[in-house]
Length: 359
Image 1 (tube, one colour):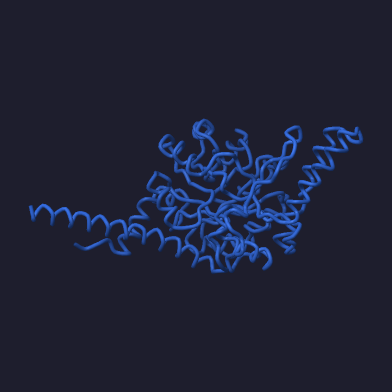
Image 2 (cartoon, helix red, strand yellow):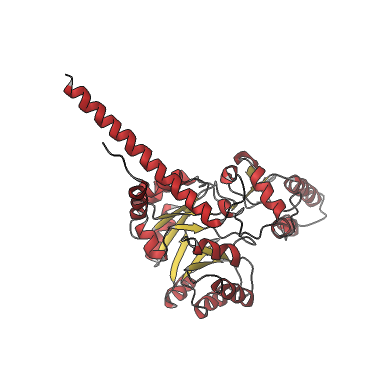
């Protein structure tokens, strides 16, 4: 019996991801996670040029800065890419207008429940609208409100996270939201995992941590080395020491900065208990602890006190590679898994036939 060939395996992967590839207009339904300071013109263009779908991280950019970044990305690639906008940004509507004026084909609304006004404006600009859905109920609401696609991101991801794992979200949402393509994210670092989610019904996958150490990534060498050395268990959520002073969980590699954050919380809360500061001021002081910390780590290389936001798939990052090679390796791993499974099935069938013939 002849087993599945590499070409046949690749065709199977393309078939499984056809809906996602069609929505994004790309060869491979692999999205680059929008990582502030990392997902800029160089990496985004590299992902798109390699057949994936790069996504610019707007973060806290002003409209003028976003316009410049979009144009710089367009100068580096003629392939489709998207822009990730944080819904809490005070200039959200202006940022959407910039995307429309610069002919951005896809807008990803992240960081909260997208306002309907913002969603309607994106659609009016004839751009593809994608939003994040951390729960089935919200996924269904977003579909009713007109999204073209969804991203479901589990707690294994880096940066700001929810409380539900990727595998559980996939089981909850993929079978129950057939109306639009759904992309799975969070903790994905190998092709076998991508294949598993595609076979569960996903239209593609989003990976962030995997691309941090791409050759084209502008992340500081020290930041990249922290990722290469890091293990899955090193990427932990930030610690909240008092529920009266909530901390939005952020997954990052543990370092001196994480320890100082815990100490700072205790110090601020002690001052609040002593009546030296009111609760609102104390909360703001805690929230401002990490101001600028991600830039210090990514751009300046301060890996001791900066923020090393990373997903648990960081343990699967073992070196610096060109973006195209990273994507090819992921696809090769997925194809190899299909080929191996097909070969095992063929052996089982041959064994059964042999047993039958010998009876």
